[in-house]
Image (cartoon, rainbow, N blue to C red):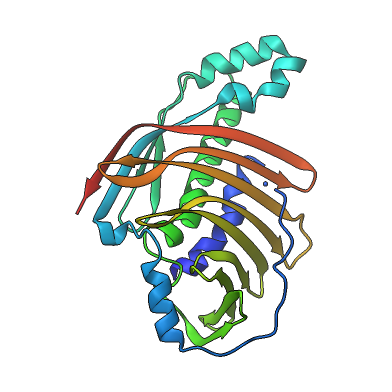
Length: 276
């Protein structure tokens, strides 16, 4: 499966365990000014990104540490005793994450002792939710950071120069349509993916550093074609150098499904990085 397709599939995964954010208006449409040479433009676009793979990235490992007190803030107000009991349990939970050279994340956790079946089921949901949230985040992160959004392009490539932006379109497989807008510095401002099953949009924001474009945040929406609530997500990323390479160190995630909102803060502690 291509990186682009894997990227858009993260949206339902991301919120499955925790529950998804506000989307900016679409960019102003402009009449195409010309049709530049796609290979030349995409070559420049690829060189504009930080590209961890080209810098020797092999593995990133850390302990994911959610801010449970922030996540359970409402419980602290409505049920202080329940909040204290939950905090004592969550303080014992450990999530270890290893991100490989392809940007795929493997999450493992310890097993916390539970006193009854209800608590056991609840902890199972927590483990599953954290696994899916972190897996989903890295599936979105890796096309922008491990390589570039244009490292692998499907068939039927089209490129237009709208004057202020470039529009790039291609098809993945038989029926997955990719439509990307990027500005004059080749930073992606919007990526739309349409399939027979769902439509998705992501609007990334980058830090423009001497080493290239580094993903700093994104907003995204996901809508299944079958009747289902829209999923919306907003993620802020703090990046820090580990062994000389910029990688995520903190996440601030807000998610909505229908009218349900979840906000979670997470630190990546004890980080280590291996180069090729």
